[in-house]
Length: 258
Image 1: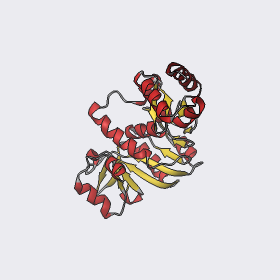
Image 2: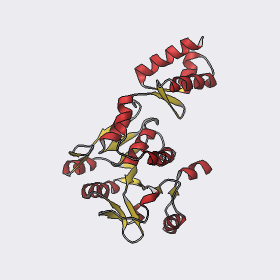
Image 3: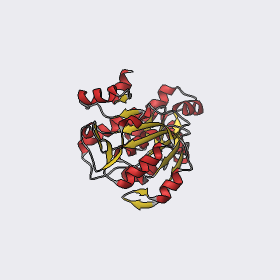
Image 4: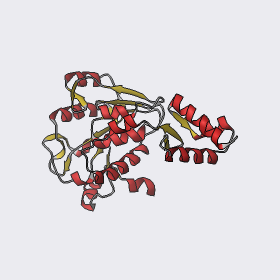
């Protein structure tokens, strides 16, 4: 089969199903996986798709634009992506995951959208948008009062009580040895405190620049975390703080080294 015909078939498949694996295309087109990866690389350069771990998803510019906050500093994006790439390796297909609202968690959502058979629960519209074209995953958007692309309030808490999670990812705005974990919104603090009770594993997401700082509303002590996820710029003094509490600390460097 000529390359042009393979490309046509791949495009039609993605337009219909939005997602495909390299193995599936190799079987369908009766060519090697190496050949399929070359075809996917070509289509990614054309802007038709985005390659994932073991396959590809259809590129949708509307969803892509809705995911990012244009007011955010461009220099921070590589740090967000580092954390998202790390989070991908901490989750298994088929698990139930709560992603509380947050900018970094939106990047994590995009990374996780390439996994399969996840059940994602969130109060964040941007996180929900990341799974808009991820047909092999199940998205549950909580109800509540909408404020800045996320829902909060009593309805949200009542919805939460119907679930239990394998993993909870909470994004915080400050982490200090004396105060513990803090966020900038009392409603977010309340949401996190209720979510923690429903999760088998709690992952605290915190950018390195927020270590040693505090925000207005306290979430709790760090010892409620089963692991901490940050970027590779974290100072050694804060690494020691985490290690002294016997809490696993993950950065992008950890994943690639281990």
